[in-house]
Length: 480
Image (cartoon, rainbow, N blue to C red):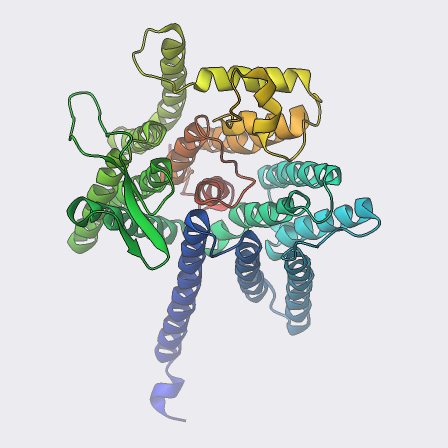
């Protein structure tokens, strides 16, 4: 045996190089997953069940890595591998069956729904190594299980061949992956860099329309939204609102908001670490994403970005002790702005949201109070309470869940989102402030839009991951 082969430092360097290759492959797969989510959100090329399969693959990788890291004895490691592969294979079979329009839960639908529920919840527990869950993490599992169970139970109201009888399975797999898999598989900084780069690419594709006009890029139709013009007090660029590859500008605003906050955080971190190349790259990404956010004219996304950057900025300027004050102050400030808009003291249009929220509250009060109107579109439930023939969405994620799943599901949803944010805020000495700021931004953004965590849109995936990082992300050493 050569001296180099027996050198411990050589073996260590090889192990480190191998780990980097594996990590790079995992990050690449996650980046591909995010790209698939964007494609699914903007086109019909990637279907929800296919996204679910991709999420299961990520879960298998996490489960395998946890098995290697946890078990030293080969028989225990082998049993863990078989458990991960077994539950993943069973869930994969269930998801694959839902790809057919004729898929149904069979003659005994209640039993089949119970089986689907058990498989979905077992998946997140097995691949996530539930033995090590804390009380807070188990509470999140409980909220997830309640939402999954209610949405699946409501499918009994639809014929087996309807997509309404199948979509909760896809949504549950993706929500579970966002909460319990992605945060433990992809480090927070890798997530932020990927998010910033993805957002910048989307914005740059849209910016080209100001020079060459609307155009086709592969399967995407890249364009503007001539019906409005972006503006903020004192700034009027006299250009059309940008939508880029998305059907409407709010989609661009949502992605640009996440990318902008991620880039700002990484700019500060790389600058503080005196890494000029990294700081320059992050600064460019922040500028591009910020420009895209402004041109999207998505007011809710702008507000969410301002809140998130404000919370992170407060922690940088004052220290961690400022985090609870910044979080509570931001929430109260948003509530104050809404109150001012309601009474006309703040000259900002609500775009009919107050009427939609009132109709949603009436639908919740008059409908099945405990378990809601069902997993169909919330617009059907609130339409009778609105003037006119339109059937718009509630434009509020929390109200949408309350309409569909009643008080039981609604409070489970609020408990998952608000409870995770509140617990992380109380743990301000150790929490990852960047992810807390991003999660608060998403929580506020959901107050103005109808996407929920129980879905597969790009907003749902990113917001769910932010909550997941609060639950399973790294913790700093306690500070005084």
